[in-house]
Image (cartoon, rainbow, N blue to C red; front, side, top):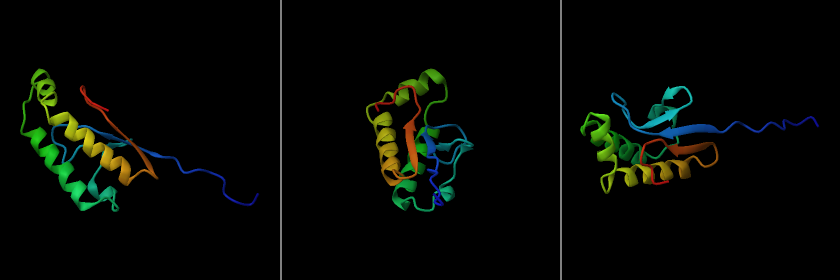
Length: 104
């Protein structure tokens, strides 16, 4: 008694691309910003930005989008980045990939 027994609520992060997004990381309130995560490694931030830019330069229609995500390296690379993000935030957040073809 006398101590604070409450457990902080874990943040829920989703990794998925979207048009106009600077990177593919979202939280419960919407598109997150790298500045929201000061402890995130600069290398991972750069990789997430680069993946988003490749996606944004890709096909526009939903059908072509699905084909693009099913390309040999596209979805597995996003899944790898999501796992890396989950490792960096394992103490404070749950991370999941939200795409049609997630391999995780």
